[in-house]
Image (cartoon, rainbow, N blue to C red; front, side, top):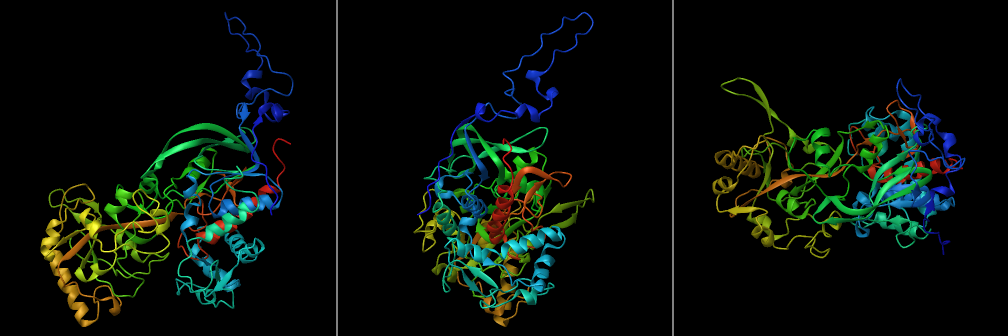
Length: 600
């Protein structure tokens, strides 16, 4: 049984503030400043007095610290837990601050699958480097590569069984792709559940249990849930990060998980460092509008944790961090827009498979026209991004150009043959959604016959394609009601059915196996939207995952890991965010633990 760890203790400022005044310049301490020289006709002000020698307060240190630990980690995902385990193994104290309630702990890591790492060869490394395409320095990419390939042995050292598996490159035309592919015997990739298991939703659970076995848990008191970090406490002279300001005991009101109320302000001292491991900003609408290539104001949903709202980005900005990869996000599924709006998280629909597996349906824009091969690979690539394409039109009067997103919104059209099984996509992404109000893990948030969702108006039906199109009320990018072009939809459905009969999609080259006609009434339409996985935006880092300032220098005692400032700024696959978060949490913690406490 692991040695029991002490819960974080409350500490008064008087216990450690000796010598704090020596760090600061006298002029910076207003309470200890000499009397100002009076101007003409003024009376001299009395000199300020200090507390006893060595106890003069500094403006950036709270009068009282409520908690302290060697490492203070913001988040409870994969990187936060591996950092915590490294601290426990080193005999150091650690405190994790988690914004979410306990049943939502784990961030995006909690609802993700296996690992893809590639064979540990120089040629396979070139494949990863090619995908990064200069968006991260070579030494950082190499440090990432090395750290990821340490993971299998590290997991085993923590009592977690590793099962190696085959690796297949997603981008076969990229340099090094052939070397990336490999067999289980070549240790090309790995997972944490036995072969034959179809999904791997609980990877995070293995690491959570390993951390708990070392005394890091909610029960032990060193994981504090419903305690969002709000601000980093920084020495104004040395720029060292001394701790974190947070709110303990906040309240969320479902389905609004982007905002919280209440809470008690606390100050947490980080004797060695703070590690930001609190995910990206996929749930921050302002972030999406300003930093991604998505139409401003267009509805987008997400199917990971609903608590990633860019908190780590904002805290790092306030202490001078340099940001990168702000436009990079991941989205590889479609969701029912109206269901997602109601529930507060992405309700992924089983509209199409990965390149094969016949299922009735096409995707059309407001003109009633197809615009893509619906059977793209629904993994981490760019095949479906045509959704966001815009066209330039000339106005007949003023003859000026404007940007019009013709594919926003888009609709999934299918016939009655598709109604014999749930429209909701099964798989591990359901875990977080099933916790939403009114749903259970058993129902997955969707009825077996789809009738309850039809009754809610989440999709519509009609006896003819023309009638279906006339029922759809569409607003364009500028908010004008334009409706769907009924004639356009009828024409495109007829053309698609001809392709089905011929066994060849002349417009987009869809796999013949997927060409199932839309011919059996009634017919259905659902507004679908891109469902995001995560963003990769955040502070830039170096090979130690130290947070860099605007000049490219490390901000002392501050680190960020995982998808918060991910190395992926171009394509996304490589080893992926999941091994990235586990590996970089370890790298950051090991470097931070070697530091001397700032109050020594």
